Amino acid sequence: AQSVTQLDSHVSVSEGTPVLLRCNYSSSYSPSLFWYVQHPNKGLQLLLKYTSAATLVKGINGFEAEFKKSETSFHLTKPSAHMSDAAEYFCVVHGGTSYGKLTFGQGTILTVHP
Amino acid sequence: EPEVTQTPSHQVTQMGQEVILRCVPISNHLYFYWYRQILGQKVEFLVSFYNNEISEKSEIFDDQFSVERPDGSNFTLKIRSTKLEDSAMYFCASSELTDNQPQHFGDGTRLSIL
Image 1 (cartoon, each protein chain N blue to C red):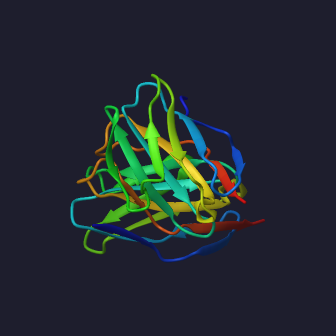
Image 2 (cartoon, helix red, strand yellow):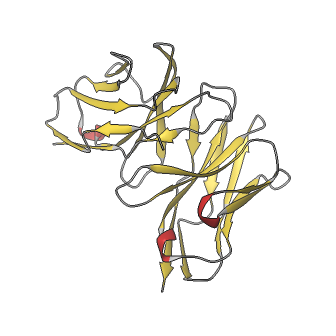
């Protein structure tokens, strides 16, 4: 079985400052991990994915995430926040044993202040 | 870029009525999924579908739910007799493969049961 915990339900940053959204996972298998973003009234857009290649993964819009097996973490970062980054972010794990079932974290709402 | 499209964007239905939510997955994808998100809760897996049959389903996906791929492009979710607790955002997703391949999501259908 797999699970995902996003450690912050809300994160608030100022434009131009770094973003850190924290995620811990639990999986019985070597997981595939994803970050998705959801803007208001829109679907879930893939930001990046980790699939057992490089542990530092670069995604779209300047986001990146680092897979740390020893800490079972997959935190999402961005060096400089932009107003357009304001959205809800989901850390997601694919367990590898089932037919594509994804397990979602509860989401982190990112607010960006001018 | 190819997209998953869902219709309608918002569906209002009386309790006890049947409802069909429609999705057009990305054309070369082979695996199809439904998820739902009750307001304020996590995104939850409902069902995965491959080769014209259900691959996996969650405990939420009881006898009131069914899925179908009636032709080469559409993928539908039917709720036979809706309950108040079926009110949620329903997301359709598709992927080329299951392992390591990200799922692409539609914008969702907001289902409101009165």
